[in-house]
Amino acid sequence: SQTWLIVPAAGQGRRMGADKPKQYLTLADEQPVLAHTLARLHSAFPSARLVLCLDADDRWFSPYWVPFTDWQRVSGGSERMDSVLNALHAMAADDNDVVMVHDVARPCITLGDLQALYQAASTHPAGALLAMPVADTMKRADDKYQSVQTEPRDGLWHALTPQGFRYALLLRALETARQQQTLVTDEASAVEALGEHPQLISGRRDNLKITHPDDLALAAAIMAAQTA
Ligand code: C5P
Figure 1 (cartoon, rainbow, N blue to C red):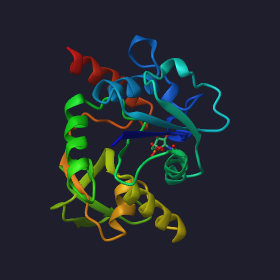
Figure 2: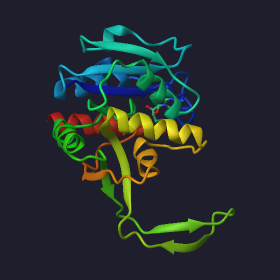
Figure 3: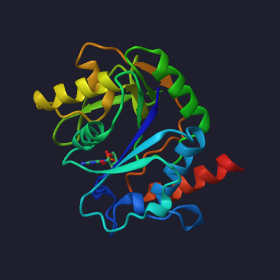
Figure 4: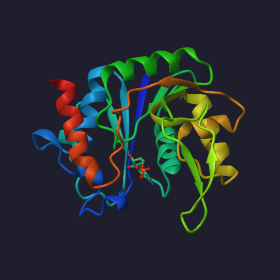
């Protein structure tokens, strides 16, 4: 069987407020976020097959940044789940192949977390995701940003990526979500909606998703500390 990686990289990254999508902003070694993310994935899964979701009008991508020998590019959709569905439809995968989906905006992913996630995704029938227990007290706000209630944080986790599932399950989950017009912001929520319960794998806290302008410097510092 074959191991697949889907990297959704078709977002605009509007919250960054930069002149290009965040995956093309430069981190260490003058390399963009996208190159760092792909390099980390490749070091863990050198013989995996990569499907990269890119905006049809992407003006910044260069294949020079792709270290995989076996890879293909697909067009992104209007939402993240549409991009991932485009990838799933374009892949020549078998039902039981393990497919891991990883945000291009998470370049600080470590080898250890990638290996742990793959191990869980290939053994748990409902798949698995990296996640982190919530440490802060959680507030429910009203529309004036007033704190109206405290939510119990017991059993609450932050969902990270990668998230990994068997191909047939992930395809059925996302097709069902699209049919029912439920907007899912990660793959696991579509799988949950089928009544399946993906395994949470406690991941590192430094698996940052680059979202806001400050995150770029933070990611560079994290990566420098990881390789020190
Ligand atoms: O915007 P956000 O950080 O939540 O996006 C998560 C990931 O999904 C990013 O890697 C982004 O490039 C990708 N994405 C996509 N297609 C979209 C929207 C987001 O591939 N239509």
